[in-house]
Length: 62
Image (cartoon, rainbow, N blue to C red; front, side):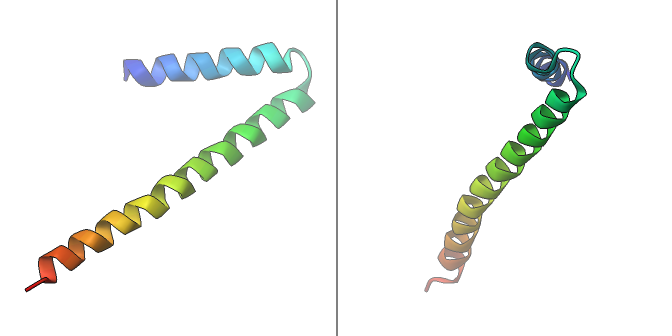
């Protein structure tokens, strides 16, 4: 829980430094954050599938 609060605080501080009082900048920060998050999930998911497949092949090997 503490790690999540620290990461959220750092992210919000970065948003505040970049966005300031401009809602358009806040929206840009949020969209960039979401795009980066989905890209990271996509990149790590594809390597996870390879590990799962090789584990399945290992179980079925004679």
